[in-house]
Every structure is written in C-alpha cells, then in structure tokens.
Image (tube, rainbow, N blue to C red; front, side, top):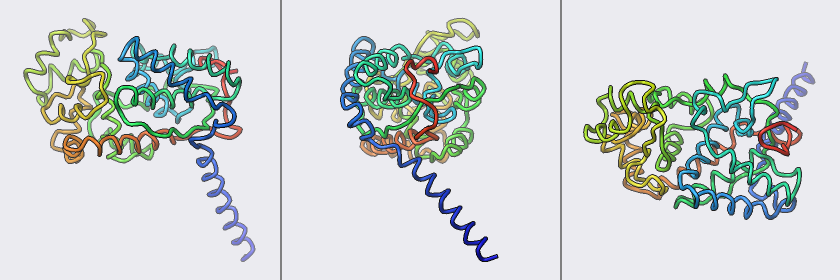
Length: 320
C-alpha cells in the first residue's frame, strides 16, 4: 500500500515537472544560434509595412491576440481553409477585418531564406506584434520564443473564443480568466486599442442605442456609420480618437470622457470594478506600459505547442 502511494507521488511530481518543462522551452534566445538574424528580419519587415500604412501595426497586434485566444498561440489564425477543416479567417471576429497576413507571409519568406525550416509562424507573429507596438511608440520587451505551429484550425473555436465588441464586463473578465489572464491584464490588453480602427458594424449599436457614451462623440461617429444595418458596415473609425497611430494612454483618457468607440471598451469605465485601473493608467502612462508588457508575455504563454508538438510550417497559410 505504501509503495503504491510512493509511486503515485512520483508520478504526480513527474507530471508537474513535465508541464513546467514545456513552458520553460519558451525563451527569448530560442533562435539565437539557429537563426540569429531573425530579430532584424522581422523588425525591418514590420517597419516597412507600417511606413506604408500606419494602421498595419494595430492589425498585426490584433492578429496575435486573435491567434492566442483560439486554442493558444499556435499560428492557427494564419491557416487558409482546406478540404479537412474550415479555418479561423472566416470566423465572425475575423471575416473582412483580420489583416496583416501578407506581412507575415513576407517575413516568413525572408526567414526561410536565412534559416529554412527553423522558425515557426506562431513565433513570427508574436515578434511582429511586439515590433508593431514598439515602432508606434509603445514599450519594447523580450518576446519568448520556441512555439511550434498547429496543423489545424477551428472556425467554431474562433467564433466562440474571441470576445465580441458587444461583450459586457462580466463576460470579458470571465473569458480572460479562463485563459489565465487577470482583470488587470484585461484592461491593459484592451489598451492596445490606443492604435487601430474598427468597422461601423462593430460600434453601430453603441453609438445609436446606448447611454454610456458622450453625445457629441456619438454624433460625430454617426456621420460615417449609418443607422441601417448593411449600410456602411465596413466604414472605419479610429478606436482612439486622439492619437490612433501612436501607442500611448489616450485610450484610457477617452474612456473617462465616455468616448470609447466599442461597447466592450466603454464597459471598462462604467461604474464597475475596472474603473480604478482605468483611472490609474490615465494618470500614470508608465504603469500602463509596464502592465501591458506583462500581459502580452502572459498572453503569449497561452497553450503553446513546443518540443515535438505541431510543426514548423514552410508556408504560414498551409500545413507542410
């Protein structure tokens, strides 16, 4: 009886150690020997893409978010549909809005020339998101690398796993919590909306039907977003009215003035538990930057494929 208990304890310890080893395989210097020029290749490509269109930085950041929230940070969002599965690109949160795939393709092409078959698409996306933030004036951090790529994608998981712009605060907190992200992480990561734009279809209800929005701001958004559904659905508006191409804390200042573009933005400052965090980031931009970095690192740790799991795709759009 005692020997069985001892064996059980050993097995539990082995399982725990194995789990920690998987996470430990992600490291900032993962490719330092196998692909030393990776940081320059990614940075140069992202710099070129943002120089052509500043909005692309926000698109790459959003693409990483949408990847990690669906079965982990595994590059699945990059896969095209096949005869075996419907991919995530056609999901409601991504269809007609997810962008930056060509930038990731271009980076992958250059990386394959430098070190073929070494760097995953999932890692390229993670590094491109970081460089996008930094090149638009945000913080820099060491991205943990070593992920491998998924061999499949899930339309239903993308439809159900990515928080909708109509989400209330409890729904947001619950979804983030299910992935190991705290309420503070939720608010900090939402601050990524200090860059980029949103489609009319995602904020129409907020600017016409809700009271937690400043009236003049609502009317200004209505001028480019007709009330009728289907009319002007793809018309764009900046998520941060003040500085949509600069990564700063203006997003939080907007929320305090009830100028959040999305319902899911404004619920972060609407008399709830996150009000104090928003006020803190408004008063202390460094606090926001620091918390954003920590939240991005935590998000990048969501269920990575490592070791012999998955594969390193040669083409980010299809499995090998």
